[in-house]
Amino acid sequence: MITTISYNQEEIIKNIIQLYCPQGIELDPTYSKGVFYKNIEKPFHRFDLHPQIEGVREADCRELPLGGESVSSIMFDPPFVGASQKDGKPGVIKTRFGYYKNIPILWDMYIDALKEFHRILKENGILIFKCQDTIESSKQYFSEFKIIKEALALGFYPKDKFILLAKSRLMSPNMKVQQHARKFHSYFLVFIKKDCKVAY
Ligand SMILES: C[S@@+](CC[C@H](N)C(=O)[O-])C[C@H]1O[C@@H](n2cnc3c(N)ncnc32)[C@H](O)[C@@H]1O
Image 1 (cartoon, rainbow, N blue to C red):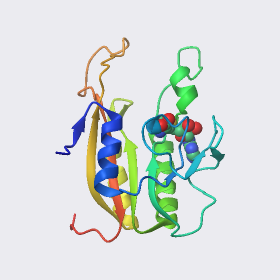
Image 2: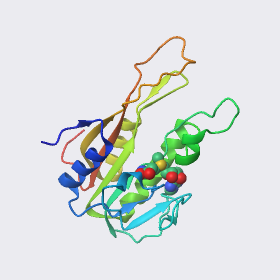
Image 3: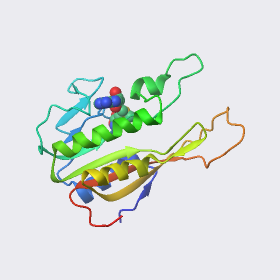
């Protein structure tokens, strides 16, 4: 039985494919090195703002070189926000995966990318959106809510949600007084380009 929660990213992606896009994933506009596809068929279209491996074409997810209503399924895994190290450099993970400086910049990118995905997706096409909630300047930013709200307004139907639990439980040594629960999970949101069947 397929359930929402897993510690295994590959299991989640395979479950999403089984439930919602048995033909596989056609486009990944934030491909990076394609870790998602070690044991999963690679998407036909592979793009990244900064391609790192052969076979990945350079493109911004907000302006893809694809025609309108031409794609059946999209996997979107953009970078999260993150502060730089003390020396001002971004650090190994952020250098490899990229990062956005703050939430407003990240959310603006989400909105523009959602508009572009709505343009290129066929009717009933699937969008898989990986995200996580973030605390910035002592405020809780529920990116999940923001993405669902914007996607609904554009004409996406929020169909499902999968929760990836983190095995590693690193805590920041700088945190003195805890103000919010520490989040050890991220989401894979699944949208269909069709009228929403629920009145939110
Ligand atoms: C978290 S990584 C993706 C990892 C990938 N899912 C994998 O399996 O290896 C995010 C990627 O998005 C790319 N990226 C950041 N902003 C982008 C943009 N505006 N358009 C396209 N790619 C972007 C980064 O260069 C980075 O390679």
